[in-house]
Image (cartoon, rainbow, N blue to C red; front, side):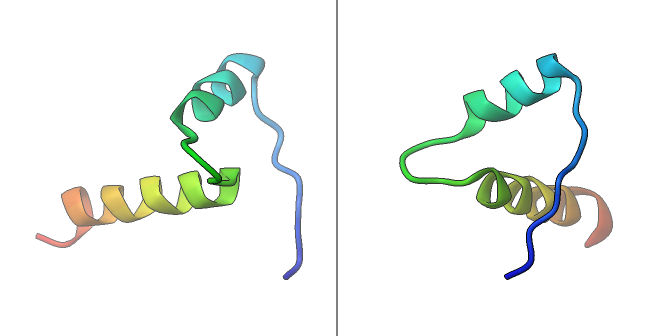
Length: 44
């Protein structure tokens, strides 16, 4: 799997880090957030 870097403000990174649980990666957290957003806003 190809990896990339996304520039974030430190506070955003810290907030994202706080959402990680167990063995989750940042990719896992972001995918979960995107899916939640889709369900709440795009799949009406």
